[in-house]
Image 1 (spheres, rainbow, N blue to C red):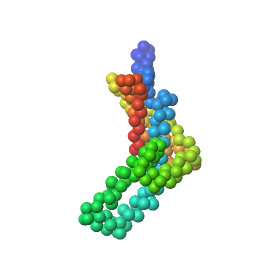
Image 2: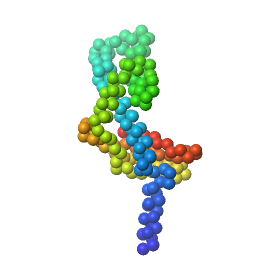
Image 3: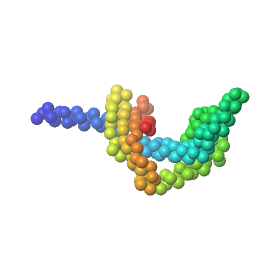
Image 4: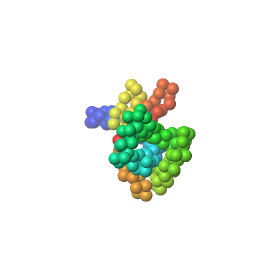
Length: 177
């Protein structure tokens, strides 16, 4: 009987990570959810921008020809991959409330993303601690982002890390699959 109790206690200590760093603490969940919401807004804005601006250039013969002649002339402004990276970076800054060059060009896409996100709520559910690193004061976590049906986005599995820094602050890093 004593062996069974010891095993159960050991499991509880492992799952809870440590006192300040836990995958399912209310502050960690709130922070992770805020970070995920920002990234989802960026991805929604990017999706519409891509469909309206990038795809017509990238996926047509004329667009490919335009890129070819631009490269041949040494003009890299038509580098689609570079444009994608710069645009997503601009969306990310705008979604965090920062200013960017040509903000008016991107604002309508962020407003669109906001309108979608305002349709319902998002929650972080089925939270699991997948790895515990007590020496680093770090937990690796998995969860499911659950969207209200009105948002019309499929629930998605996500990962995030929680780590206590030497100054006692707890940091959350998100990863979207």
